[in-house]
Amino acid sequence: MKYCNKCLMPDTRPRIQFNEEEICNACTHSESKKKIDWKLRKKEFLDIILKIKNRDKKFNNKYDCIVPWSGGKDSSTIAYKLKFEYDLNPLLVTFSPLILNELGNYNRELLIKAGFDSIFIKPNNKISKKLSKRFFIERGNPKVAWDAGINSTPVQLAINFKIPFIFYAEHGESEYGGLVLDEKSQKLRKFEEVIEHQIGDHPENWVSNDINLSDLAMYIYPDPEILEKNNINAYYFSYFFKWSMFENYKFISEKLPEFKTVKNGKTDGTFTNFDSLDDKIDNIYYYMQYIKFGFGRATRDACRMIQNNQMTRKEGLELVKKYDHELPKLYFKDSLDFLDMNEIEFFDIVNKHRNNEIWEQNNNDFKLRFPPK
Image (cartoon, rainbow, N blue to C red; front, side, top):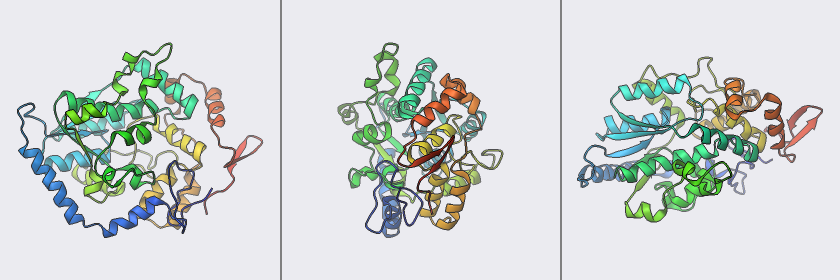
């Protein structure tokens, strides 16, 4: 494993690229933000807002745009700013977490009470559980189908409700190190990138003996021809405004002081308490990144804060050593019940997904062959 010299991300992260100085493309992108004329970017954004306000509303005279919304800090910040700073009326669309928890429900209700309309979409739980178990076994990722759902349903609703504007959060491929298709893809959400990077598959391929094509309706992304015909414009907020998960948390907790975080001060596997809070199975999802790629949730959070000059690499390294390896104790039993597994079956699958090139085993203990330093 090779680690970025500026942050702590290893080259095992899918699609990440390193330059000759062994600096990852997330860090080079972060550095490039210093050269961006953010006032000009904001003017671009205001031009879009004006276009939205002046559009022909004969088909839908109520909603100006859609915000794919989990109730967390990032999507809530976008929704709040669109409504109260830019005078739009966004429709909030939530594709249900796999395993709902009280914290996510509370934070969603908190923003709705501030003055928003919201649609909460709950897919067939029987199908959801089957797909989650299948992809946990096959790919070490219980959220493959969920990823498809959160991508497809806001677009499906945009088409059906004739609301042609969608505002997403950040462009992950550029913000966190990935494969950027072209310069425009940092601004506009593209079909090819959604399929290749966000979902990684066509849901039509998931038909099996006990899952029909009709069972997968919520997960299937509309064809590009349909998107073009309906003039769907999906933008990334991170193109127009400098992106920071920590700044988003500070913003929404200031606007909504009752916004809740994890009670014990930190989430399993990391040092933060304010990110990815609405789904009980998220702790297992991030733990499996550690198993498959050798970096966990603490690395993810530390790198994002290092890139935004909110901590040093040395500070991040200490936090990574302390927390990256933590087992997902919180909600562990709930997750096993959802996946219909016992603990022995779970860890058997976990170990089948270990990459022997990055892990070494001593009896029942595993450790990274090339830990960060």
